[in-house]
Length: 162
Image (cartoon, rainbow, N blue to C red; front, side, top):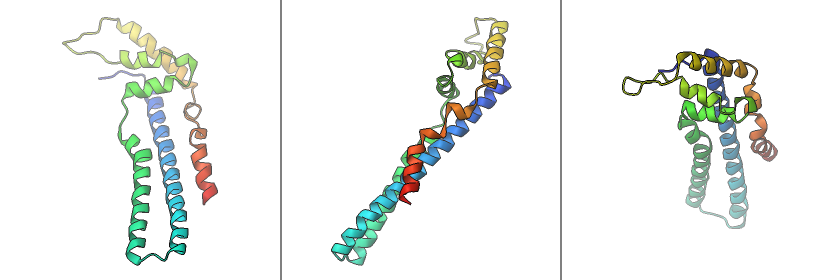
C-alpha cells in the first residue's frame, strides 16, 4: 500500500511511458537498420552467384528472424521487464539535482509497513517528504529527464538509410 502524492505518482507514470516510447523508437530503428543492412548484403551475393530459390528463402527468413530478434531485445524485452517504482524513482532522480536522494526516499517512505514490520518514523515526517518531492516534481519536465536525443542517433541512422 502506498501513499505517494498524486503528482509524484503521475510523474513516475509519465517517466515510465516516456521510457517505453524511447525504447520502442530505438528498437524499431535498430530493427529497420538490421533489415535494410542484411538485405543490402544479400543483394550482391545473389547477383554474383545466382542462388537457388530455396537458399533465397532461407536467407530471407534469417533476415526476418534477425530483425525480429533485434526488435525483441532492444524494444520489447526491456519494455516487458516492468521496472519497479523504486527503480523508476532512482532513474528519475538522476535527472535533476534537486531530487537527489529525495524521490527515492519519498517512494520508500510511502510504504506504510505491515503488522510484522511497523514504521518507526512519524507520519508528519513522511508527509513532509512527500510534499517536498511533489513540489520539486511539479517543475521537472519529463522530456528533460528523457530527451529524444538519447535515441537520436538510432533515428537519424534509420532515416538516413531509408
